Image 1: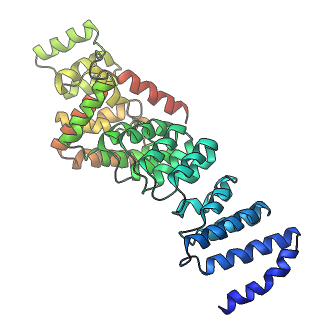
Image 2: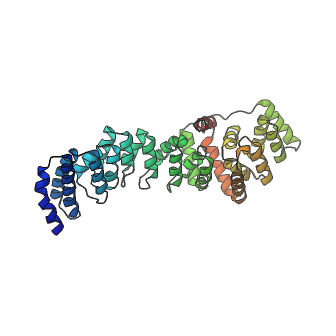
Image 3: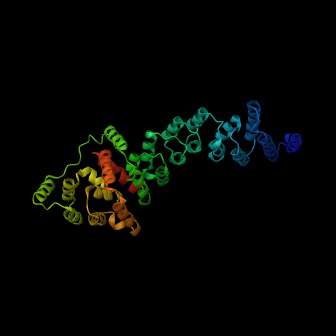
Length: 375
């Protein structure tokens, strides 16, 4: 009580001082008085302090308001009236208190998103205890930094539609990609598609998440593919001459892995895709997606699921467009995936890719091209 009494003795002089320095000192003093008993005060006392502090906050400079917001981070029950003033301030001032304080209502946070949006959405997205409705509002604003903050907020209750929206936004945002891959609740089939858009260092992490695919995930992927029109879209047709070539090789017993490697090395891609469909039961649409996945992990899974030899996989990986650009470490990682992955898991993952991509491969490739163009 001695400290509180000492502060009270200073109040008369501070109230008479109308200078900027005096106002900052008064705000600091009143804040000290509130925080000294904030954990045990009644709602009436908290509301009274809130009105007083809110009025004082309006009368001081931005530096003093920023200091006040930072101090409020240490208590979970700051006065709502004061928080409203700070939340309406510039993002650097609005950020500290609302991120951790529990007294702001969902309606107040939603109103802030509607009025301010933009950088203020980042403030709300970082908050603990977000509701699904607030998450949906943040996602709808499509502010890149807010989406990144939302994905990094492990407490944010992301639903299926939210993950889909974040995945599409992540195609050109590496930080968002990293945040999504790090989430423990990332659906496996979202990781399946995300693999096509992330940078090579992140592709291994995306693949590990994709390998958790289960029969339930496969069923969900089928539903999504149908809803998006992938499953019902006719696949790219092979040229008749390529089909005739594959049939002839099959009839003569010459259709095998060595032929696939030679066709890729010779640039005979029409014949390659026709022969690959005979050997691995993969349509040209899906095979094009798997071959063009930048990291090479999709090709590794395809070769493993088809039962190809490791030398066949390495020859295809080196001969294809991205092969020459891979570092020694990346090539080693590909080899380890091919060597260690269980064939049954590879087959299940391939089936899920077939379902997700279906006839929509051209759409996947257009998005992938846009990502590469963005750097």
